Amino acid sequence: MRDHLFRALADPTRRKILELLATRDRTAGELAEEFPIAFASVSHHLGVLKNAGLVASEREGQHMRYRLNTTVFQDMARYLVKTFSGGADA
Amino acid sequence: MRDHLFRALADPTRRKILELLATRDRTAGELAEEFPIAFASVSHHLGVLKNAGLVASEREGQHMRYRLNTTVFQDMARYLVKTFSGGADA
DNA sequence: CAAAGACTTAGACGTTCATCTAAATATCTC
DNA sequence: GAGATATTTAGATGAACGTCTAAGTCTTTG
Image (cartoon, rainbow over all chains, first blue to last red; front, top):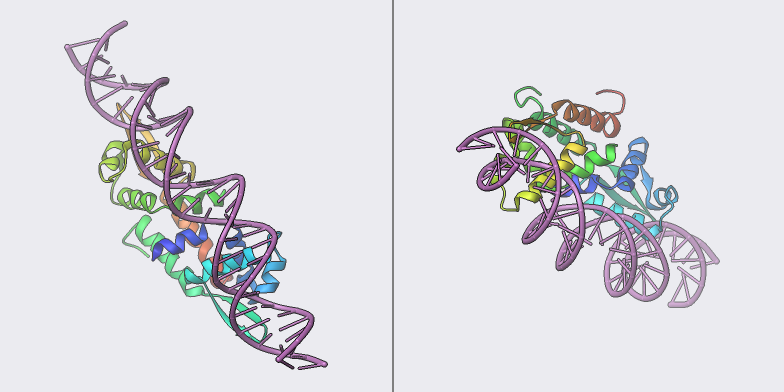
């Protein structure tokens, strides 16, 4: 379960997608335009991110709107600090 | 540079190694005993973690002592929250 | 210095993964 | 409902990765 999360973050394209979504929600097409790879490949990455719980999506007519699931990142940050740095604090 | 970091965390064996080191420093041999895989494989993982800056090692006679580099985790946690959750606030 | 112990490096192998093209699904418009 | 647009799914391919065994390096001890 945590495995999906870390694995999803391991790819630079996916991290870039997340960074783009951090500024504002976007459709799959808008995201795909930002990358030199095939549309279908970006769609695949979005699937991985969604499966990891890092993003959510809603249909918007013909488009699919993606948005960041910010709480997961907070939880992850907490886990990192708690587990690997201090343990007691934060 | 950040790539090495995320990639290193993507493997469950490596995360387990980090968790073990979080409780106390250990030698390569002590760590290897905790896993069902070959000694050399654990050594390989330690190399990946070291290359990512997540652990440091010092020779201690015949042994190699590994310890966690806690500051990297703090930095990473900060990055996650800052970049993906809020942006302004920590 | 030779032998033993601790660890790393090298080379090989099977699996996983990112990418591609092509086909399928879903929505809108006419 | 047929055609166009937007997105996902399927199948294939090459690269990257985790693991293994074998060989190499470093350190201690007799």
